Image (tube, rainbow, N blue to C red; front, side, top):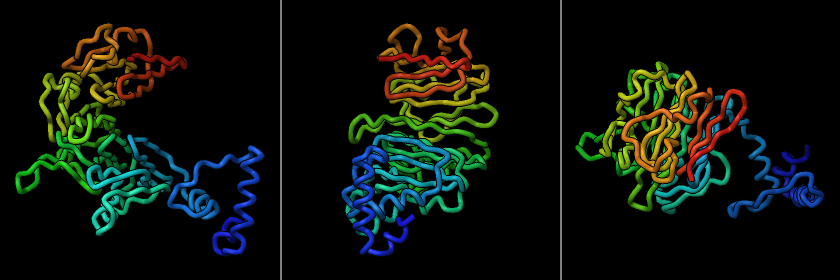
Length: 311
């Protein structure tokens, strides 16, 4: 392996670059596009190779989150002072440019010391849940998707540059989180968040437009609130669309609520659902996994079948 040697020795770098290009032309190892901030392939690929294999991955609008085998949080992609989705606060506040591009997954300093279990990447905010069940959020949201309520000065928390614990969930052992891909245009970030506790309880917070939070109204909620309509269900997982939400129970039943404008609720109409409602078309299917796009959903059945609905 002459890669590490070439990385340290500039004279060998040209030879390694030529070999990489030759292998790419032969179709053995096609090269992706080299990031503009990188001068050559060898150092870039070496840094990628040295990253520990991620065990959890989440993709947002313009960023990705990773959890490596040591349960550490990494992020990459595009960020700005308005979004702050990468969690690298220092890079955005140290007098540098108002935007940040990380072409390679980089450790998030503020999450050092946390053992991360899962992550969720929304359009304008990010979430993580630790192995101990704590939830952290960062990014931006005018309608409460961060879950921090108000600060001591009485102002709503609309931006968080680095991961911050959601205190309203203290005492709740959360096992998974979901973040919506919605931003609704600049200044209209109608984002929302979901969390599932180890006892099957579901919490939601953020923009309430179209009843996407499942509380029976379109009111915004700035701190996590349990969805009472799901109290009789032991929920295993959740997913968040742009303006709707999905829950999967331990018994394989799928529930949806929020906007039905594009048929994404699966109830056979285009009407909104103010409260979680079972998808009757799947009542005879034992679903084991669900996922949301902006306006459509996917469900994986135990027997291997895949179901989709929406536009």
